Length: 315
Image 1: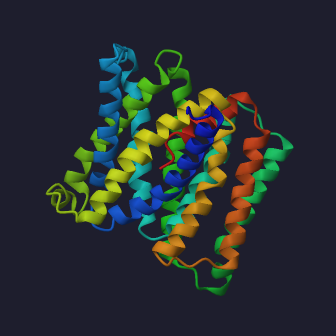
Image 2: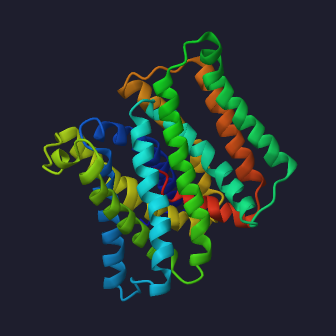
Image 3: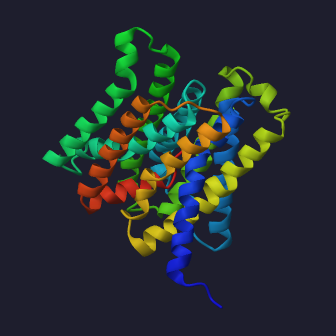
């Protein structure tokens, strides 16, 4: 008996929410024993190579025009290299749940900001209200500890790392839109994954502590399993399913995974890593996700498309 198409789509959506809600946990497991640059570089370079090899086997174009190479390389550094290494080092000092919330909440807001800066979108009152909610969420997360003088500096640095990495990715996402007039989105995804991943592999050998040792692959089975999870379900399967849902549902509806995945990340983090969640943290996270919800619900087709593009590679 054939599976109903609607049921299959819902199963794919649930799969995406769960997998992308647990990728932060897998990254946290991996970087506990492996150099962040090597861990991420191997994942993204291999994912990009697989995408481009499949395109080549199907007879589709792989190499971009020579005039686009500088722009594609620069965008690859923003989308993959800087985004990944900064976020992973930030993840070393904060919980996976907080990292997931910051990334999911900030992405649509940052995309809106960069779109406004490039003249692709305009602010309205509701969006300004959403920014206010986001700021309130941050103040609730860190304000009480600041006033009491008990603020954990390393936690702030970690949150700043995840934030900066997310901003790098969002700025790169907005920059990809003009290039998509020439390059196919999947082709561009493969190129950015491969180029950004290769830079992540080469650069750490010279500057990152433990990078050379990580290339000996004495990672331990938890890190290997985490890496395989991030490569297979986390990158290739979920991204393919996401593009299918964008095709069938439109860009905005699948993007609502951003409000489900962080909840999964927080719950699994509490169970797996015994991460603590206080009522102030929960309230702050709720406000940040509420701000993201307002932005997603009030933006026009152009911005929703940008959100969908960014959501395809959340972490």
